[in-house]
Length: 383
Image 1 (cartoon, helix red, strand yellow):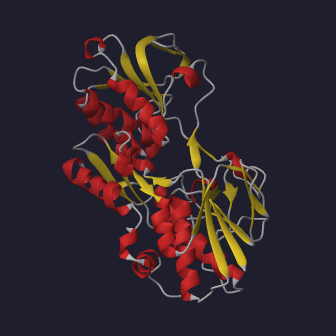
Image 2 (cartoon, helix red, strand yellow):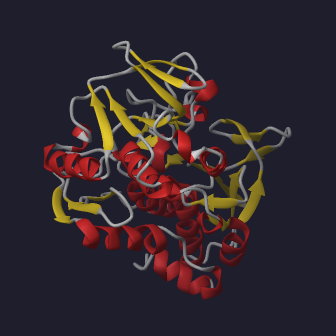
Image 3 (cartoon, helix red, strand yellow):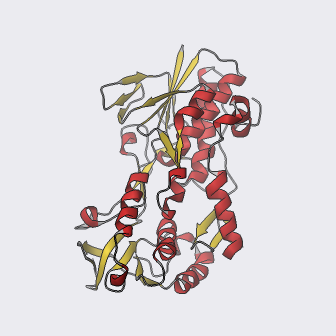
């Protein structure tokens, strides 16, 4: 019996499991055992967490994996090597092929007080902690103690504008970034719309600023400005799981480098998908830390791991189509197409697209559809 282990139960890992199971079925490869290892019993729909932690954002893994014939091992992964997945309880799962899909975490900067007093919108539990904190705020102090969001790129913008919807018009909300324009890292095509959305939402943007220190009731900027705030939320970028640091070659940001088949360069039989790995999306662009790339990367990695086990030709990964949809409040979003982010929809039309993406497209198929329907939905092209 050949064994394929998938380390991680996020978007990349779950989509890899479905594609691997579909490929195994279509190849009639009954001698391949597929196991997914994850510390959580569910897939968290992480892109939605800026809305707050809600039960429908947790999709149970076991019913889906059982339907497609994939073994689920719930355990905290402590180490991953080319030969085995090690777990905190002393377990060691050996494999013939491995897919790395451990994802990423928000990188909280090494600022005094940030870890102690700050919040992040990253995991379900961390978001629920922020929700509980926000629910205890006294609305009569909203002008005295602001909510501060640090980082004005994609996640920070979505968190800040959602706070306005959640807290109402009285709350003082600041958005801080070292760049001079909010959303500047997303490209020139979006900055005007983003600035207008922040202005209409009465969110004060402080550009060209960094945070020097966080206390229980203040955020102190490097310029010396002190903001009275009991809420400091960090949206300061992602770092890949440190579990991949001893495997393969790494890019500057710590992701393992992948070949066209999503195999880790310099490590035969080890594949990766999602935020831990970087591959060529097309001739000019690399994959980003986003479920938009994690899901199709997972499909190709799962497919190729099984094909590689069977000694068959693997399928190259490519994803030339690129789009983004940035929420700027409950009734406003910007949907763009292409790597230069040309705006295709905005306002309520963009918000409707965002809802479609968040509430339907990024959810895995319902197990009640049955195995064959799931396989067709994930991997419609016969191999």
